[in-house]
Length: 237
Ligand code: SAM
Image 1 (tube, rainbow, N blue to C red):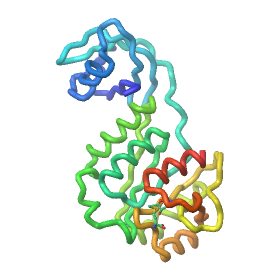
Image 2 (spheres, helix red, strand yellow):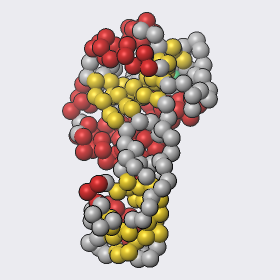
Image 3 (cartoon, rainbow, N blue to C red):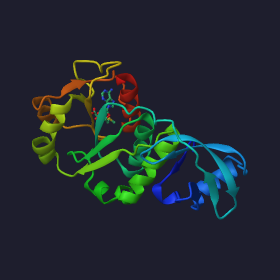
């Protein structure tokens, strides 16, 4: 927790923020070994960041005095990540990593090799997704929550959503064996598509390329989804 991320519910009209949940309190007490009088990096969800003084700390609550928070959150990456839904544990880690790296638009997509049961996972409940996004923001020192869309049909996605998404920017399909290498250091608005653990099937690759995506590879090594996403984002941006 490099940033104490405050939700509007934490902040009173008196310009004091009160934290009462066990996770953040425990972190302040046990990891930061905080005491009243110290200054901490805080940020308001969707807003600015800065230093705030901890004026009270007990096992029940931490109270911060909020003066002017003038720092802006770091710039987002110009990318919309379309990720074939990975297994629940991988999803949790991937959501955290990509949020830390600055992705603000995420679509979780069904493809042929996504296990249907993954869509029933508790990890997809809004409160669980929110938890992972918050952890990613706290890690990065960022306040802007990503938006997560769930798309449970590949064909409807291709027909109904993909054209509009591609009209906004360049579509890059990460798929081993494609003739071109992943570009480096771009600043274009990008739609980045990453496949499931078993990869995209040939028909899906064909549909995505026909729709206007550019296929690209990351070399001969086949990376796990969470590694591939991190490597792709680092190399692209
Ligand atoms: N056997 C699968 C295949 O060949 O497509 C492997 C899938 S990989 C575990 C999961 C996803 O990560 C892939 O669908 C792709 O989007 C991305 N990925 C992993 N390694 C890659 C590489 N070397 N080049 C491009 N994409 C890669």
